[in-house]
Structure formats: structure tokens, C-alpha cells
Length: 168
Image 1: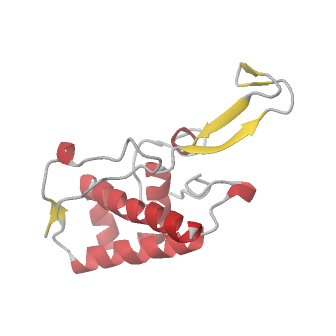
Image 2: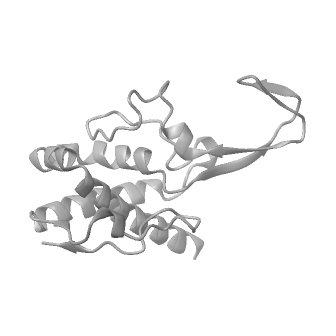
């Protein structure tokens, strides 16, 4: 049951949020329409760019360490900010730009190491199919309201949109 709920909630929000993001970046949307083979890269870049899960797993320091000049004491809890990691300029050049041609491998959208999402391959396939079908079936897809009227899910565990009014 957990896999069904977790998989549906995250993927549904990612598809809606990714659609909104593509509509807000018309040059990237047109690049994807012009080259449907970009869909795999597009899914990875959208996962990196949007980071719908805000915080990674908590960890406790086993010993005193200094991380980037900040002392961390043994026993202190650390929480990874996934959006900050996925916007790290040392890892992703021009990280605040959406670039569907970018190699976004290594993003933390599905976690890392032994803590990776169990359903990540299914989610990737669902997103590839959904975005490709959406663009093919609705070539004139556009926002029906201004960007600032799209209600965001900023008060919930999974970032997304409450609704996405579109026209076609």
C-alpha cells in the first residue's frame, strides 16, 4: 500500500509540476517537441530542477567533524536539502537554468545509495510516457491562467501544484 500511495502521489505531482515548468520555459518545450528523443534527458532534468521532495534522510554524526567550515558534533542530526544539492554549481553548470539537453545524472530526486526510491524506474517510465503523450496529443497546450494564479503545494511534504488550469 505504501508503494502505491507514495508512487502515485509523487509521480502525479511531478507530472503536473513538470508540465507547468515546461509551459513556463517555451524554448525548452519547443526543443522537446522538435526532438522527442530528448524525453529521457527531460525527465532527469525536470527531476533535478524541481526536487519535489525537499529533504533527504536524516543522519547523525558518528564523530566530531567540520564540514565546509562548520563544526558538527558527534550525535548532531544532519538533514540534506535536496534542492540545494541538485542546484550545486560544482556538480551542475548553470544549475538554476532548465536545460533539457543537460546530463542530469546524479541528481538526488530519487535519493542516493541504499536509500534510493524503490519505484524510481517505474516513475521514470510513467513520466516519459505521460510527457510524450501530453505533448503529442495536445500540441497547443498552454496555461489558462497567469503563472501567479497557479496554486502551489508549498505547505505539504511533496512539492507540486494543487491544480494546473490549462487550455488547448
